Length: 205
Image 1 (tube, rainbow, N blue to C red):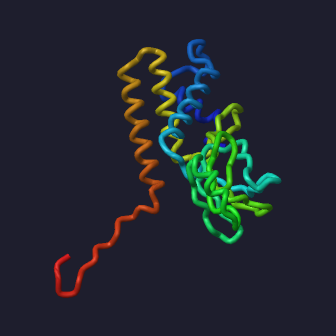
Image 2: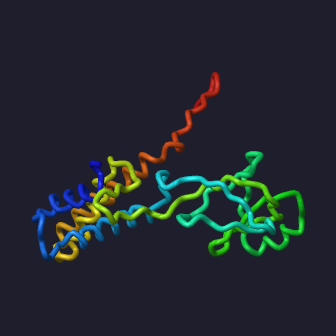
Image 3: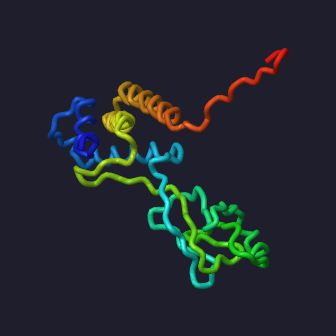
C-alpha cells in the first residue's frame, strides 16, 4: 500500500537526501524515528482513528472487568438500555456500591474497570481509544489517514536532522510537523461548528 512503512521510509530518505544504503542512517534507525513520530502525533490528543468498541462483561462478582489489551483510555461505557454509565473517582466506589439496581457508574483502577453498584451478568458496550499502532514490517500501515503521512515524515526528518546536529533543517521539519498537527486537529474538529446568529424580529443581533 502507498502508506506502508516501506513507502514512508522512502519519503524520509528522499526528504533528507539520503541514499538507500547509509551506514549512519540504516533502515532500523529511520524506522525507529518513524515510530517516534507516530507516538508524537498520538500524544497530542486522542484521535478518532484509534477509537473502537468491544463487548464488556463483568466478572462473576459483578464488580469489575478487565480492560482490553490494547486499551489506552475509555470514552464511554453503555449498558444494554443505551444509558451511558457515569465515571466516578475511586473513593466514591464503596459508597455507591451500597445501593442496588445495576451498575450506574464506573471507575478505572490500574487495569480494571470497577462498577458501582454491582453489574451482575449484564453486557456493556465499551467505547475506548486504542494504544498507538507501531510499524515493524515493511507492509505495516499506520492507522491515521494517508493524507496525514506528511506529518509523520516531517517529524521523522526532524529527528534525523537532530541526529546530524543540523539544527536549521531540524527547525524547518519541526515547523512543518506542528503545522501538520494543527491541520489534523482542524480536520477532526467536525462537531464544533460555529453557532448561527439569532436575530430577533425588529431588534438588534
